[in-house]
Image (cartoon, rainbow, N blue to C red; front, top):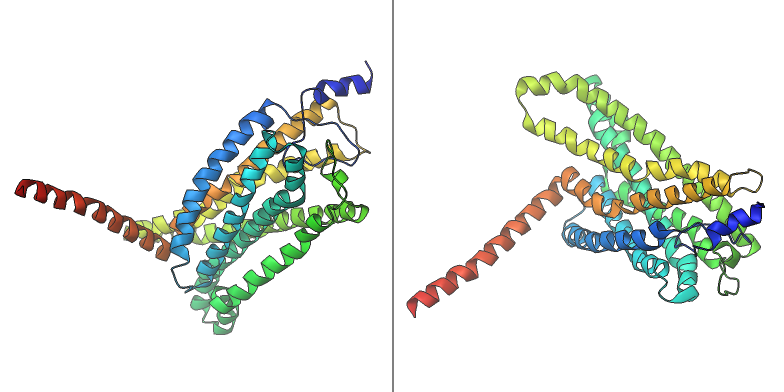
Amino acid sequence: MTNSSKGMNYINVTHTSGYGSQSAGNRTDFSSVFTQQVLPVLYALICAGGLVLNGLAAWIFFRLPSTSGLVVYLKNMVVADLLMLLSFPWRVASDLGIGGWQMKVVVCRYTAVLFYLSMYTGIVFMSLISLERYVKIVRASSSSSSSCLCSFNASSLLQRVPMARVLAFLVWALLLLCMLPNTLLTNRPAAEGCSCMELKSALGRRWHGVSAHLIVAIFWLTLILMAYCYTSIAQHVYRSYRRVLRDGSEAGRKSNRSIFSLLAVFFLCFVPYHVCRVPYTLSQLSGIKFSMQTRFHLFQAKEATLFLSALNVCLDPVIYFLMCRTFRESLLRKLSTADGENRRPSITNGLSVSNL
């Protein structure tokens, strides 16, 4: 059997997937029932859940003053999640075949870029939060014990609101500069059956490669930074563990759980995708030979782990609740107020009926 006849087994059952990347001129597509029917439903579910959770988070956060660097970083994570949510309906429609090839063009040019912009912006803010927690827990403790005020004042800049706002602006500006050309340079005339890469100009394809390497480098640098910060935090927590047990401090144990919630979400959502992306990217290179079956399974794994990355929009509100006391107290206060208002009319109605 020839290579072309082997490839047809996959071509006959597939069409272009929302965020799937392809090489220019490569018509082989490895979509399946999983990517075309199961994933759209899952994306629709997290879109609905994420809108509720992040809408509530935004309603609370943007009524609160930015009293610390942590609050500034968390607010920007909410914005990144809301932007990511905007890309989901377009992906779902494209994967379900709604809107035809014109919808796929919209996804290629705009919403896929928005998805990755939001994802990597959120990753960078996770790294800043990790660094801020490291400064607050480890550096502040060591500086106070050694009475080195100069070191403490320098490291505490990360926790100050003006510096946090400057860093937030730089993060958005640099990632926009990196990702926006992927939209502007996807400017070739569209036709039915075109892949995303075929819509890009020659410069656009080169920029796509540069930006892809850059954002992957951002992830691995964030992973190294978080590994260092949380290893140091874990060592600090371990040293204080006996004291916590001796004091019977339940608050201390809750504090530790809230700190490590960020690490848990990061590893669950983003690590699988970037680990899977390494062999998937190698399978796309013309100089490296992979069988059709291997390439098919790598594509399925890439799409599944990309969904885990998208799932972060539903898990981030858990981070806000655990890590930010101001957010938690405001949410609980509003929930208790709403519960009280719901009970009050029933009591009033009961009295009016009895009087009649």
